[in-house]
Length: 453
Image (tube, rainbow, N blue to C red):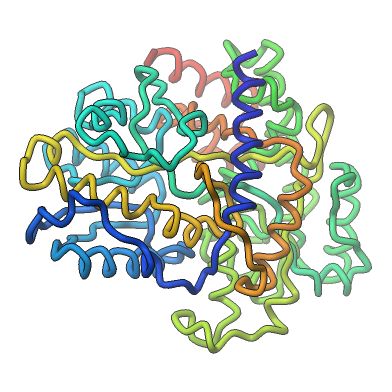
């Protein structure tokens, strides 16, 4: 029942986000007033760490918003942001352990944050509201995720995410294949991959030896449903465990059919992404954050949107991952998985407390959030209307895709994290080449998971 309730909430957040899209070229925060607390803050220096860096489509929006907040308040920000990956997650946790945590952190609100939540290193939204009653008052509290560590809410969300199948439509046309749709099955998808391969292209851009995450998630999801996907198996032999084994078996099958790049076990994720954007691979399974990366790849200058090759961008689309069993293609992995935390370190500093609250209120305001959310989800109570003329073609296609989504379910790998995933993530090359038994790899991960409970 709880999982059904959560699924409903995520679906609602998806709808709210579609209503709350804004221009990706807007000057984030240009029409937003900082909170009253900021006017008394003086010249405070805040250390802020986010994932708005690298090829993240919101990296520039973040820099714009920071500059606007600095101009309005007289405060300054030391930005230690980095691209989100396992190294980044480890670095953040280590910073908390060593007392080097930032004042404000944009981070995951699931089990990745358990250590510093349990250690009392971040301040709950309720505790902040005791002193600042209007904090996050523009958000729908039902859509703010609670920490699995103690059930309290800490992170104020900005934008959600979804994971779906990006498509190079020119390759599909050359191969005589239709873009997969809401009713496309897994078997039909495999047939399409065979046609694409026979046409001389790589069907799927993926670095299985580097970032197998998305295929791991969806292949397992394809043997489950939104109701049970977030359940961790007790063993590789139980019903859910067998779903995991079968899902990884589907990846092995696609590998043996030659549907991944020839160097999929040694290539980096950046290299296979380039295969996709350069017109050498047909499909790319990734997250909503990749929209910005694809748009940038269609610009002669990735930093200058006026250099966009519109014809090239128009060749790209995004659609549903073909379904299998109880999971419909329109059931996506997604949700509101990240948000802004205020650390206890900043909260206990009288000079920084007001500034930290002001910064988060600014970055999560009704005017700024839509600039970041664009084609994804938000928790805003009153999302501004969408002006599609402000969006690029791939963003509009993403909105069209999202309008047909039947559910959003969180990623089970966010619960099954850290060392638990080594045997099936790092071990993916051994799995797909048959050097490692799939059931044994799954069981190793589960043993590690339950040993840590």
